[in-house]
Image 1 (cartoon, rainbow, N blue to C red):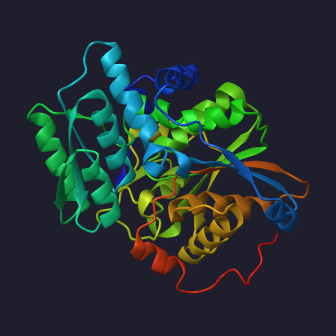
Image 2: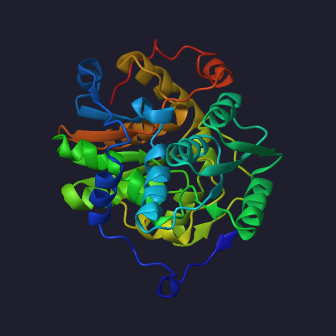
Length: 339
């Protein structure tokens, strides 16, 4: 289904890039400043310099904590901290909202599909959230809307200014820490991560190109970018990159994503290939959703004739046992990366 967007009738005011710095000042006492990592072996094999911002070291093991925390802290600043928060999620946003709620004394109710990673469900409960599972993503979103209408405050996974600003602080840190990239790559799900990344780049690296990677099997954002209209899946797409399976963008995130320098669609085999290689080279856990960004960067680097310096945003490191088995079912480490 294609939803036409009339930008002249947007019901929100786009964020200025400075909102990312304001968000970082707000959440800095609570978060971890995650590391930058590099592999000299990978750089030699590709003939380019790849720097990774590794959000697997963030609290909850993913960047989503940044956005959820910023949303609640901004409400607290205004004296509007709610007693109850509700949201839907495939897993990482669920944990982010649950932990942020726990830190600030806010009750949280999370809707997840029954097929969501059991380990992410367990982690969400461990932070004190009331977890409700539903058969489908559509039912999870409908139940979330119902609870919000009953009075709970809804923190949308990506269609929220403060969530976007908080998520953009990861890229801000990388740029503050001295990375001077020719191009920046991130994985696109609902678009909040890329929207915040784009804004951070405009603040500190306005000459850097910004690209999105997206699973080919869940390419609603890429289709939207190409057609100029939001494309929505009627049913949840299927990909091993379970953090990038949103049904569609929001007008808010689409506003920022239209300004990116391009999208790269990545096959399931490419996602698994780079999940294996990044785990091997960086000696840390890498979610398949994170590997999408590296797969996209690799496609772009193949088109470059001079040595490039690239920042790849690795969104998280939460991998369920069943996903591990799928990732390592076949060995791709005997096929060396190259250009």
